Image (tube, rainbow, N blue to C red; front, side):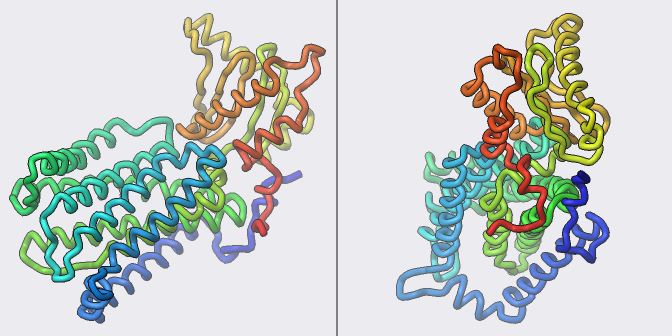
Length: 426
């Protein structure tokens, strides 16, 4: 059976490569953002400002309140799904969403329909939660892309973002809410530079992810495309905001009214995680094969996800080889490297063998790379297996395949046959 054929899709059929897929989404979102800017900041600026941003229903200001409610609704839905299915990979995204929502609620509570922002403790909390949400969005994408945050990038972002957060905390305790001193303007500019660094990093991660989504199923192209659209919009949002800051510094009054863009971007990123979080989380690492080996080197389960591994497995050679190599590498680690931790991962250019060991089982995944949340799911996978089979069957038989199918549905639904179909769920 040729697995790659089942990956083919009629959607975006006119596109010949992942590059065209990425460019198309970027162009569409850029046009959308450009039209939004043209309408709200130029053609209908006066009407939009007076009737939407500063519009009143009696004494009620609906602008920030509406945005906050939308964020709360989606964050709550995603939280329900995450807690129900144990989706730990959504932790940082959820924190980021709730911090953004909190920022909008405090912005609404501090809103002044006259146009000037009251310098109060509410405003300081709004700024603090908004800034922290950027940091958690960074962690979400960084840990879905690699084992741990890149040290240099982490230091840069921390130095840009944390000082302003400390200033907000100081203001709350000292009740000093002024925000127009030269030092505070410098701190705000530093946050914007850090945010550009965050969203540029996220954009580059999104491009890499999109290549994997394009080469997967029709469903992956749709959901991956939505997420990438949100990532592009996030980057455009921070460019708008940075432009505002520069113009404000030189005395030019101009607003892009970018807050709705930020909300739409977060929703585009969140919806695919709600619809199919495992697909979004496990396609980018480009998992090629999954295997479960015991201490004796016996392979109890082997699942190929690409042509090369499927073809090679027809004789059973691959699964036997993985079992033998896993034990061999473990012995090398213990006897030669004197490591009691055992094998963790091995990299071979564009491939990696990622191993999670919990006596007496080795869960082995061959992928393009390991990520923090992939390893976290692997750990939970083996723990659940041990609850069903503390040890391999004493009669020397293999663990029944249905056990692995049940575990796959819970932790790695991408391994089930459904994900190799181009049909959408009903």
